[in-house]
Amino acid sequence: MKMKKYTADTMVQAMQQVRKDFGDEAVILSSTIVQPKGLLGMFRKKRVEVVAGFDEPAVLKESGLPSADEMVQSATSGPDPSLEELKQDMREVKLLLKAAKKSSSFDQYPDSMQPLLDRLTAQELKPELVRTAADRIFSRMKEEKTDFTEAEQRQIIKELLKEELADLPFGGVNLKKKYVNVLGPTGVGKTTTIAKIAARSLIENKRKVGFITTDTYRIAAIEQLRTYANLLQAPVEVAYTADDFRQALEKLADKDIVFIDTAGRNYKELKFVDDLKQLIDFNLEMETYLVLAATTKESDMRAIAEQFGEFPIGQFIFTKLDETESIGPVYNMVTDFQKGIAYMTDGQEVPEDLEEATVGNLLTLLLEEGADA
Ligand SMILES: Nc1nc2c(ncn2[C@@H]2O[C@H](COP(=O)(O)OP(=O)(O)O)[C@@H](O)[C@H]2O)c(=O)[nH]1
Ligand SMILES: [Mg+2]
Image 1 (cartoon, rainbow, N blue to C red):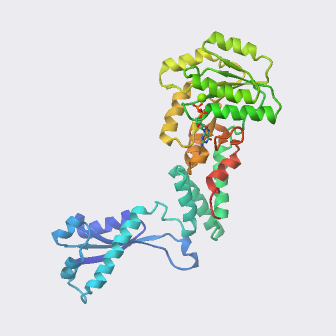
Image 2 (cartoon, rainbow, N blue to C red):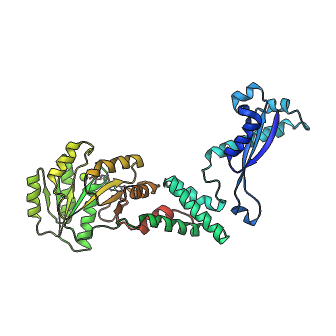
Image 3 (cartoon, helix red, strand yellow):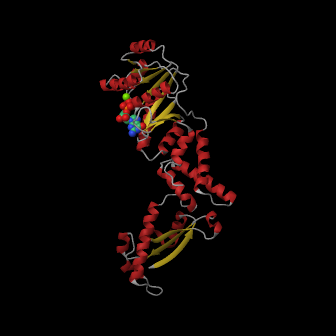
C-alpha cells in the first residue's frame, strides 16, 4: 500500500490533493486538525493533516476501515511495524473518525472559544448567528492580540445579540391599554398566564381587574378561569357571541384592565380566524399577545406564529421555561418574527412564576444560566 501525508487549510482542499494523486479509490487512514504551535499559534489558522493510502485489497474497501492484518501484508516499504502497533494505530484512526463526526463545524476557532460555542450550539441558537458571534470574538482577539476569558467572550456576544433586539418591544402590560388579549394553541398556559398578570396588576399596581373568556368550548376552561378570578375577587364574563362580548365590555366598564382569554384553535382554518375576529373587537385599545410554550419544537412554533399571522400580535409570551434547557429557539423566534417578549413564565404557581421580559434577562438565560464561569 502506498501512503502519503497531506497538509492543507481545509479538509476539502486536502481531499482534492488526495484525489489528484490517488483518484477516487483512495482510503483516508487518518485526519487530524493541527493547531500551530507557540504563544500566538491560536491566531494562526488551524491546518488539516490527512494520511491517505491506495492499492488496498478489496476487503478493506468494503469495511471502509483498513484491517490491521491486511496492512501488515501490504506495507511494503520501510521496516514492518508490529501487529500491536498497527492495532494501536487502528484504534486511533477509529477515535479520530468518531471525533471528526462529533466535532462541531467551529474547528477553525481557538480552543478557548469552544466552551462558549458549544453552549450556544446546545442552546439551539441559529448556527449562522453562532458563526457571526464566533467571527466577531475571534477578530477582536486578533485585533487586541490576546486571548479572551469566557466571560469576556460572553460580553462580546451579548453586545451582538443586543443589537439584534434593539428595536423590539420588551416588557409587560403598560397599563395604558385597557384590554389585554392572549392567543395561542391549547395547553400552552394562556389562562394560567393571564391569571398571573391579572394578580400582579391587582396586587402590585392596584388596578381593578376583570376577565372575559371566549373559551366556551370546554366547561372546565371557564371554571378554571373562575377559580383564579374568585381568588382575586374579580368578575368573569363569558362571551359566546359578539353581542355577549359587547355586553361584557359594558359590564366591565369600571375596570382598569380587562383580560380576555381565548380558546386554542387551529387558526390555519379560516373559519376559526373569522370566528375570533367576529367575536373579539380587535380595534379596541388592546394589547394582543401570542403565547408560546418554550418546550415546543422551533419548527412548530414557527408554524403556529404563522397561523396567528392574521391577528395584530404585538409581542410574544413564552411559557414553560422551567421545562427546557434550550432558550435559543425563543431568541430565534423573536428575531425572525421581529416581535419582542412581554413575559416569560417558569412554573405553574400563580402569580409567582411570571417575569416581565427584558433583553437583559433573556440574554442571561441564553448565555449565563447554569454556566460554570
Ligand atoms: N411547567 C410549567 N407549566 C405551566 C406553565 N404555565 C402554564 N403551565 C401549565 O400548563 C397547563 C395548561 O395551562 P393553561 O393555562 O390551562 O393553558 P391554556 O390551554 O393555554 O389556557 C397547566 O397545567 C398549567 O399549570 C409554566 O410556565 N411552566
Ligand atoms: Mg385556557
